[in-house]
Image 1 (tube, rainbow, N blue to C red):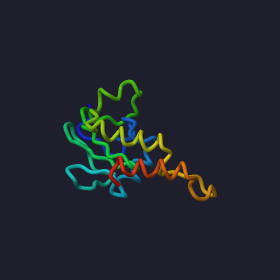
Image 2 (tube, rainbow, N blue to C red):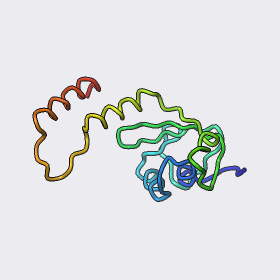
Image 3 (cartoon, one colour):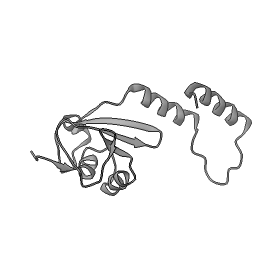
Image 4 (cartoon, rainbow, N blue to C red):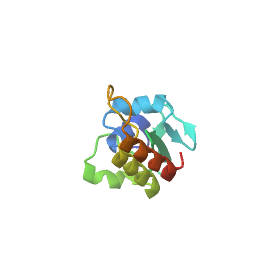
Length: 128
C-alpha cells in the first residue's frame, strides 16, 4: 500500500467524485477540508485523517482507512474509507430532492401555488 496519495486522486478513487477533474476543482474552490483547513489538490492524505466535503447542500465527512491511487469498485469502497456523515444530512438531502426544491428548469416561470406551499413547508422543516 502507498504511504500517502494526492487527495484529488483518492477522492476520485473511492468514488466521492465521478471524475478526478471534479475532485481537483472541489479542492481548489475550498469545498474539501481537513481539520477545518481548505486543502490543495496535491495535498497527500494519510490513514486516519477525516476529510469534510461540501457537495451542494450536503456536508459529507469521510475517514481515510487506506490511501489508494487506483479507482476501486463500488462494492469495495467500504474497505478504503469510512463514511462519518450523520444520517440527518442524508435525510435533509432526500427531503429536498423529494420536494423538488432548489432546482428549477430555466424558462418555467414562477412556482405554482402548490410548489410555493411545498417550499414553505420545507423551509419551516429545515429552519431556513
